[in-house]
Structure formats: C-alpha cells, structure tokens
Image (cartoon, rainbow over all chains, first blue to last red; front, side, top):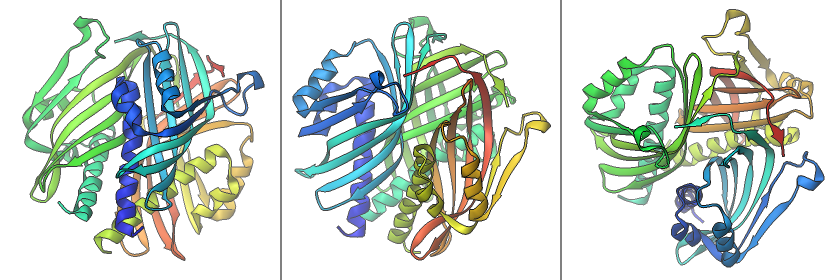
Length: 153
Length: 153
Length: 153
C-alpha cells in the first residue's frame, strides 16, 4: 500500500469507528449493522482483569445475526454515551487492517450509572471498497457502578 | 478535490475544532473569534430530546457580534472543560466542508457541575485560505447536574 | 517538508501519544520508556493556575533515568485512565515537531479518585526514523478529588 493510500485508509477506518459509536448512541440500528462483515465477531469484557473472577464475563457475538439480536435485547430508553480516542491503525494490505482505540462508555439505568474505560483491539476488512469491522475485543481498565445522584436536564 | 488535498483539508478542519475548544477553556477570546465566518450561526441545544419540553431550549447566535456577546456574558471565573472526539469530516468542494463530532463538556459553577454529552454537526467554509466555522448545531445525548461533592486541587 | 510527508509525520506523532498513554494505563514500562529521547524533560503541573499556591507544584523529570524512577515509584496496583483529544501538530522540519493535546486523567487510590483535565504542550524529535517525545509540559484546567463512592465491577 503506498503512503497516500495508507493515509486514506487510516482516515476511512477512523470514520468507521466514529460512526460505530454515533449509531449506538443515536440508536440508528439500520446504519450500525452495515458497519460489520457478515462473519464479524465481537467480544466485550464486562470487567477489568483486577475484578473478582465471577464478574469477569466476556460477551461474544458471532456474526451479524447475533449482533442484531444483542441490539434488540437492549432497553430502547437506555441512554448511552461512547467515546473513542487515540487510534493506532495499521494497514496490513489492500484489504486488511488492525487498530487499537482507547474508550470510555456510560450507560444510564433508572437508578444507577455504569461508567467504564478500556481499549478496543479490532481488525478491519475492505469489502466492495468499504472498510468494515471484522472483529473486535473490548478489554477493560476500570468499570465502576454509581448510584444515580444527579438530575437530568 | 484530489485525495492529498482532501486529507490536508480534513487535518486543517480537525485543528480548527481543536482550537475552538482550547480557546474556550483557556479563555483566549481574541483567538476564538477568528475561527468563525462573519455570518456564522451557532445553535446549542441545552438538553437531550428526552428531557422535559420546558428544558429543551436551543440557544442561537447569529453572526460574530452575537458570538462575542455570548462570550462576554459568561462568568470569567467559571471553569470549563470541552472535549471532542471521533470526527467525521466531508470535504464537499475546494471551499466547503461539513463535519460531525462527539463531544463532552463540563461547566463548574460554585455549587454545582453541569456535565453534558452530545454531537456537533457543523459546516466549514474556506476564506482567504483558512477553514472557518460557518455554522454548528450541538445536539445532546445527556446533560446531568451534580451537586458539587469534590475538593478542587 | 512536503505535504504528504507532513501528513505521515502528523499521523506518526499522534500514534506516539496514543501509545504513551496506552503503555501507562496497561503498565507496559518496557514499551513506554522507548518513546522518549535520552534527554527528554517532562513537566507535570499538579493543579490549575486558580488553585491555592501551595498546591501548584510542578513535577519535573530530566532524562530517561528520572522518567524510569518516576514509573517505579508508582503503586503497581493503582488504576489509571488517560485520554487525549484534539491534537494540534506542527511539523517544524524533517526531525522537529511540536504539538498540543487536550487531556483527561483518572487516578484511583483505595479511598479516593483524582480526576484531572488539562493540556499537553510537547516537542518531538525524529531519531533514527522514529518520532520521540523530547519534552512535554502538562498544564491543568481543573483537578478534582472525590471520595470513592462507587463499586468497581
């Protein structure tokens, strides 16, 4: 891959991840589901390695059908905020890439808030000219649960 | 716009937004006001769509004069932190572009903290070789008010 | 520096900073220490300019040996999260650059949390084809201490 193409690919992949989170937080499922390869595998660690073993579950979703089911199982009124930072993207070939992102997420339930931090490690595949997420693994630095103590404006 | 120019424009626009927030938080009005076109229109939603209707005001500033008035109306001792993430920038022509950014802001008042999250949707115009903000609209995912419960170091 | 090389250098420097924080939070000292020039100088303001003078200390580390000592003095069980945002990178020559980053950090102690916000101003030097951090200065917008009121998952 030449230097200019590599920069274009990096920018395109940054954008895939930006849209991934925007679609989650704005609840645009029809756009969200288009970001994955058909065989995409998503793994989400629910707690940090320092957490008690019983809390250290990893959720796995195999393929677009399970990704869609995960979406549909969420409370549609739940408010979420996801931010990603500081990408490290490697273009491996014309159609393969990998990346690492720092992340923060907030999930607001009626009485509590889960506030998490961690990293995504991902691979991407270019299919019909578009970069898609082929797999991702979210690891956790810290996941905290707060009793809700604020007023929502 | 050719590919290299497009990447240069994207990087330049990312930088405009980085400076927009740095100047707000570092309180550099003279630099801040230079980032806008003369006819810039800024719209700030104060609450999320899920908030009570009476809270869902949108502040609008039409043109540089009103932007300057908004700045001057702020408490000069107020501490603010603004972060932006995950830009999606589209270069539309040699002199026009649009972008979406995820955002987080913290405004500290003497007894309370407002902590907000949302997205900016913006357009940019190149004037005399410099990208400027022509309009922006801040929408909100979540805006929370906390009683101040911390010590400032 | 031509335009393409400038963009490549900017992307490479963004990546140095991404790795700088990932290695801190993932506690990868062997990788972390390679990111600096031998004579790197790091300055960390511990509080905002608005803080009481007795709190406004600046920690300074001169050279790789002191940077390594600072690392080793930390509690190895301490959980940290560092995020950086909105880079403004200037390539000054083939081997010199400077940058500004917005930042947020969280340090979790057994009974309290320090949550800070500020900016890094840095210079970089290219040595044997790799961009390294030559000096940095962290200034603070806001540093708050919270009593720990959450459960860790």
